[in-house]
Image 1 (cartoon, rainbow, N blue to C red):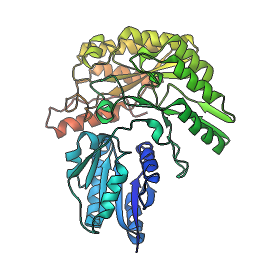
Image 2: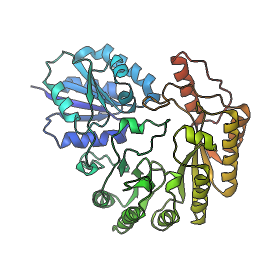
Image 3: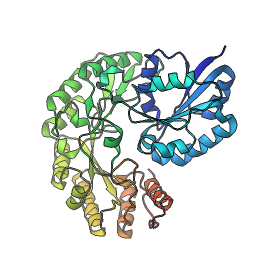
Length: 417
């Protein structure tokens, strides 16, 4: 009798999110072979010869929807109902019914660690060749991030360490509050335990972290917890072995209103990154209010100044094309970007994307003024600006066309850098 298998479609963009699910499955009573592959079609062909039944799981962003839809069509064409398909991740959580219509059997909505093993058990119990269709499983927020390790030593998967999940701020362009439950933080002890194991694996380890706001680590309010951040960084720095610590940089940028003199001193003294990434998002206070950002432009300038005073370089994120944004607002943002570059910072420019699950989902982006596009291009050529602006602009345009909205005027913009 063949052994069952669970195949996870790991790609460069999604493998971080699979690690907690892998750990939940490894710690469960599920008896199945776990197959990890980026080439899902070839992996399914091999799995169908060796295992039975086979479950294939995918996690994806809305920007990957077209690619995933084509892949599912190929899987159904080749394997029919012999393979069960499970979807999760940001897009599936925001639009579960639409995701089912792509050809998936089950969609897990939200956090999956506590429900994923049961989904697998149910699918494995189904008769071979029969498709369990139309099932949306509500995820259950983890009560404690320490319940599962941040990495999988058993599988050799070592993503950045997730230190915070969820966000108390409800920015209207962001889907994080919709996908995740309340804010939870991994304990310092759990982070250090994982870190000590990692630093023993190789000659030198680079520590990076996953957080919506790294400077909000262990905060129980909308204010920073400097003591917790200090304890975390001090504990990591004290570990024996060669290591580098990157904190307050991708993928754990920070909010400007959490940047304090003490925070940047801690990063300068205890971390190895020489830049700190903060999300300004707009150079217009009116737009910041309309999108529910929760901070002011003055706080952006203050944060940049504190970072520079500590001998670090601010890397500031901006979004252009908000539905509530006027050409005047865009010109204000452009001037703020110039100011920050003159101060010694760099900017990353993004285009508004109507992410499913966000309060601005389905809204058409505003037209980017030609003058703004041209100046962003010049800044990029000089090395002052970066960002996947053109790619994001295309996604916004395609989303608008899919909704039947008026097409977004697209002219020359920043290339994907």
